[in-house]
Length: 242
Image (cartoon, rainbow, N blue to C red; front, side):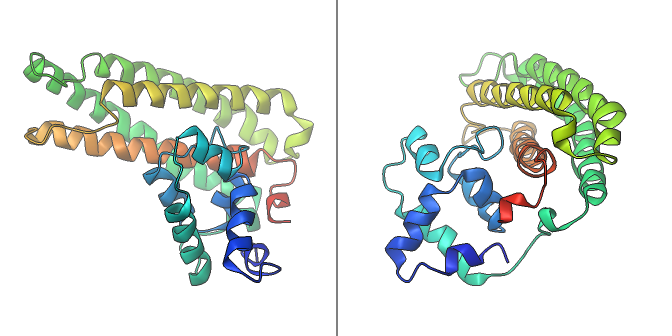
């Protein structure tokens, strides 16, 4: 079981926490079910930044007190319960099907409505401080970039990965990783436009609905990229459990 490496050979709390800090954040996201929720809360990038250690990721966010994050992660380890499938233990076909059904389809559902809501908020509240001016256009750009990206995966890369391992198709995999980095930059821009997706206290229902949807989009896109970068695109998607 993947959690065993955090439980065994670490006889005290201090050693266990040091082990977590020195693991890559992408590995922890894979190993500990529920860890991604903690990373979302603390704005730790486990998808595009998945190769950084937890220590590095915390430092980058200027989180000096690591204890709360480590305590939450260790609480999840203690539970030892899998709220979600460990996708490293599933077949590539099943993982690809999951990505297509859960993320590709969801992005195509999410973005048109978010664009509509954003345009409405910009039209009605353009004079208000904090109005996310330019958000609708940015979401439109994100939609176009994501659609192009997903089509490449659906028509070219995923059919290849159903037949061969990722290390035999490094060029298209590298291109998808590069585009994932661009999606991460687009999320950062989205956060800049929306004050970290935080609506005013007296925001109308349309504004609140928009930002709730944006938070879901951010979570979905980060999890989508994580599953591809840290599991599907590895030469052997079970190696992270070793």
